[in-house]
Length: 365
Image (tube, rainbow, N blue to C red; front, side, top):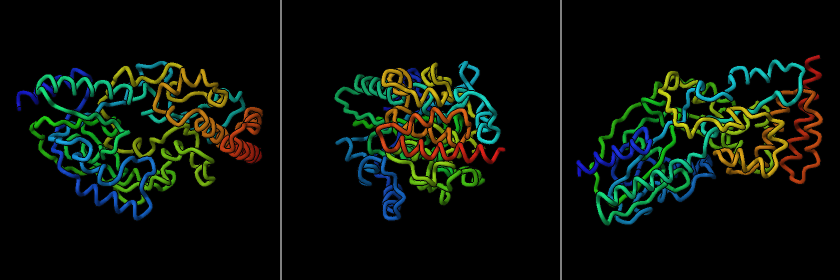
């Protein structure tokens, strides 16, 4: 099976997977304990699918499983490769140095993972190709592909497969690409030789905890998802008021804890063309464009990315709050129009944004 493993690893690299590790399907006992602890503490994500047992027991996800192949693809793209890149430092200055000008000049920042093609569309077909290749090598093999939407605790499994180690922000950090990676899993009945477990810790500098705008990293390696702005931007409904000002101009997702991580200071670029920012969005689309999205333009833009899975109303709600934080008086007419929206989350965001713009404008006088 060692020769078959080498062929599989080479084919995985040919498919574009940057990192590949193989581990056993033994239950993730420590992860099971931690998941249950967080459920009892009320700090478990509502977006996580499956029961604690399903998340930590590969045998419940594929009968007869004998190996788990973990893969990673870097989504960090050299900004010189795409013309619509905007300096993220200058973008954050919008909040403090609002200058007169049309509302159209103000932009909302997309998390890096949500700028290019939806990673599910990229990784799932390739993992199925990998499964087909393995079935060719080992006839009769059965497999199951999981990318994010399945129950498996992929970060814990990737850690055991040697792809990386955990940071205090609970991200999986790889040696080559930092934490800017997508993970995928291939559960298989083929008995592949596992890679050795290589335990390692992050620098434990605490920078991610200090930088988190909502204090969501409540302890080393523990994130309260209910406080995490990345999850807040994805949750439907009226955004709780305590998160609106900390949101700043984050349109979808939050990279703050990763951006300050020293392990991400000089990562190797992945440079997969699929993850180059969408040509009509860049890394920071105009907020005016977001608020005026039609169903057709949404399908042609955000629906192609990982930022589109919650629909355009969530993005429009976030964009209104972004405008309130920027505080440009020239956006008042844009915000006012949203007061007539049929959905309560949009109206609530517009009311708050209008009040915030007027307050910030008065403070600048």
